[in-house]
Image (tube, rainbow, N blue to C red):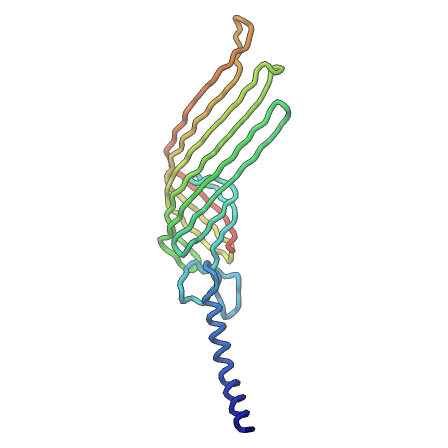
Length: 225
């Protein structure tokens, strides 16, 4: 009986490290996608852009930061990395100001950008992108003691495509882009014009269109999590 108990304890002690090692390896492989490495030193700040099923590393899918681009707009940005090669980025910015009872303005912009990675290394990505943004602007002002009021509205559409690269510095990601864009703007201005002959104001509407095709650049900074 004592011999059997001794053999059972010996088998348990010998086999325990094997079980522990297999459990640890499984947990490292099963971590979420996109990006930290260096499991030997337990360093959680190093980033690895490449994602494979055999890497014993933890990955991240999300990037939150600020972006300014002539293709997808400017403002607060959020990017979701679906896998190693496909990402979708949104950009949003809005503000409203009230100077006084006679002057106010509103501006809002929303952008969307799809990225496809061509080359992925440990700390760098090279990608192609397509995207666009929509911008709405409104301005109201009143002068000449309330007789002359003006309303200004602007709707801007923009689409573009290009190439870019992103660099990882620990969990901070910096990106730069270059490409081409097509920009279209529709502006409307409603105001009261003055008729000097009859000494009175009369309503007037001016409409204008603006088109542009040119080189577009962009840059951004984001936190990877």
